[in-house]
Length: 462
Image (cartoon, rainbow, N blue to C red; front, top):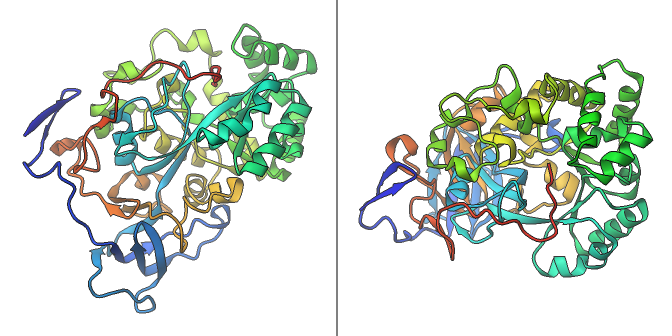
C-alpha cells in the first residue's frame, strides 16, 4: 500500500496497519540509564541497566544481574545506548495527526496541551499521540468558580491569566490544589512574586514573567491589554536591562529562592536569533504543514519574513536569553516547554531547540534533560511521567549517544517506548511518517489537516 502524506511517500506493507501482538512484559537490557533526579543535580547513572516493563508500567529498574524478569519476556538489547524518560513539552499545541506523529518521532511522549487562536484547536484523540494534559485559561472570578467543572471535563492544568487579582489567584490555587490540578501563571494584575507566595507552581514565558521588572503604571497597562500597544513599551523597557542591573538581580534572587518552576519558552524567539538554524531541515518536518503553524519560518530559508520587527524590538531575542541567564544563575528551577506552534515553533522539533537554549542560558545538559522529564514531578507532583521509577508510566526514549555530554544527542533517537509499546521507526528519510508505524494517521473524527478553531475561554497566550 502507498500513502501520500504532505508530499511524503510512505510505503506500508499489507499487514502493517494491523496492530502486532506484543508481550505484556518488555525488558530493556544493558543500556546506560541517565539519572535526571534532583533537578538534574544527581549523577548516579546506571551502566548495564535493566528496565522491566509490565502492562505499560515500570516494574523494576537496576543493574544487570540484580533485576529478575520472566524468561518469556520480550527482550530489547540496548547495549551502548542511553535510556531516558520520555520527554515532556510543558506548553504545546496539537492540531493535527501529523503534529502528534512529529512529537512522538522526536521522543515527546507527553505534552501540556494548549489550544488557542495561534495554535489551533487542541486535539485529544489522535492515534498515536503523546499523552495530553489539557490546559485551560482562568481569567475571571466566574472562571475561578468553574474550576471544578474544568476538572470534570478533563483539564489537568490551569493557566492563571492577566485579569486575575491576587485574591482570585489565591482562590484558584487553593481549589486547584484540592483537585490535583497544576497551575501556571501568565499574569498582570497579580505580581509574580505575589503569585509565587500564593503557591502558583510555574510561570510561563520569559518575556511575560519579567513583567515584574516594569514600574507599576506600565504593569497595569500591560495587564489591561497584554497583547495590545502597551506590550511594545514593555518590550522596549526590557531592552534596557543588563545582567548587572540591581532590580533584575533582586528579582532573579527572588525567583531562585521561590518554590516555582520557570517555563521560559525560549524557542518562541529562536527564529529571530542571528545564529538560528532552519527548523524545517529536521527530517520529520517533512510531514508537517506550514499552514498549521503560526507565523512559520520560510521552509526554504528558515527565516521569518516581515514580522519580527513588527512584533519585537531588534535584538529582543538575545536580550531575552540574557535576562533568563540571570534567573538561571540565581538558581531558578526549570520546566521545558516549547510554545509550539506559535511564532514558527514546530512540534517535537522545538522541544529539542528549547533544551539547547536552556543550556545556552546556563543549565547543564543533564539539568536541561531534567527540565523535560523529572522536574515535572518536582514542580507539579506528576510522578506518573518523566521518570523511570517503579510504578511510573513506561514512556522511554533510547538514544544512540550520551545526552549528558551533548544535549543535541537527545535528538539521536534509537527507539521510543510509549506506554510499554516499542516503536520500530524507519525514519522520514526511508518513508515512515510516524514513529508508530502500526497505527492509522488520523485523529478520530478529524482529517489530517490542522484544526484552526480556538477553544473557549483561552485568550491568546504568548
